[in-house]
Each structure stands twice: as structure tokens, then as C-alpha cells.
Image (cartoon, rainbow, N blue to C red; front, side, top):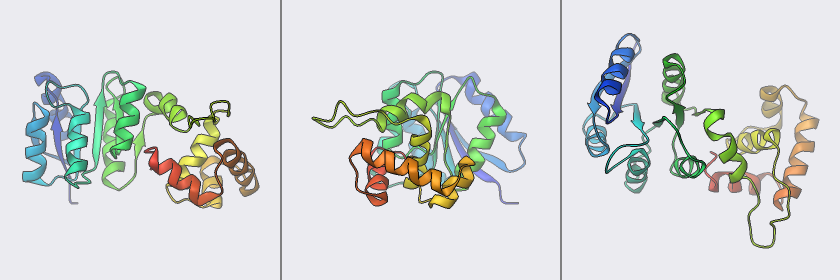
Length: 213
């Protein structure tokens, strides 16, 4: 088994060491660098080319969002998991726009963080509902000039819009949500009306622009 190579970054030494020791107990995870700030995390990413970067949101000088921004500007699509004690809607929106692949609250169990890393390393995303639910609603709320009166998407409609942006067809969306293709089509029709969009392609582009895929 080839282990998932990880760079971890947190400005709290106890947290950093704790994460490293926790990951060491997982046979499929290998920590290749422990970093105390964002700058050293960027250097470690360049040096080690890990499979996943796990980084704290709030660090002095260069924090998690800043690191995501640097990676994006450099054209580096490094799969990144953002750790946060608390995270604002604005930070969630910005992290998603910058291509974050995982968001995990520090109040969640270590086992969930490990699951997140495995999914992200495999090419999937892991966005905790507790962290991103309200932000996703805001992202897909129509806030264009002159459209303020339009209705906000429901949680189910948001799920469907995101899956469409990720490339799933109606059958696949239905299977994931345990609903029929016909129900998916009905939801899509409502979504198109609420967002003033003309079909699946526009919805996918809209959701991607908002950072949902």
C-alpha cells in the first residue's frame, strides 16, 4: 500500500504534534512535514509534493486562506483540507472559491478528519454541513441587481445544484438523494426559475463560479 503523503500546518505546537501522532497510527497516512506557519507550509508543499495539505485556518501572518490563495495564483491545485475552530460564512465562500477540497471543524472527531483526508486524496470533496450549510445557501442565493426578491434555494435544491456542477446526471443525483429521476427534473426546473438560468449547463457554470465544484 502506497501511503497518502501529508503536509500539516498549525501554529499551535500541541495541536501540530497531536495531529502528527494521530496520523502515525494510520497505516495509509504518512506525514512528510510539520509546519508552524503558512510560509513554511508553502515551502514544504514545493519541496515534498504531498498528496494532501492539511492546514489551520487561523495562523499569524499567512493563514489557511492565504495559503490557498498563493497555491491558486501559482497554478498549484494541491488538494487542501482546511481545519478551523470556527469559520465564518465569508471564509467558507472564499475557501470554496479558491478550490479547497475539505473543510473540517476542530470540534469533529479525529476519525472524521482521517476520512476527509482519504476522500480528498482520492479526488472527492469533504465539506462539513455544519461549516458550510449557511454559506452554500448564501452562495446559491440570487443576489444579482434587480433580483433580490427571488427565493432562496432549499437545502435539497442546493444539493442538486452542487451535484450537477460536479458532473452527475439526473439518475446519479437521484440515486445519491434516494429520489426518482422525475423528482430531480422537477427540482431542476424550480432551480432554473429561481436563478433565472436556462438549463443544466448554465446551472453548472453558475455553481462552479460560486465555488461549489
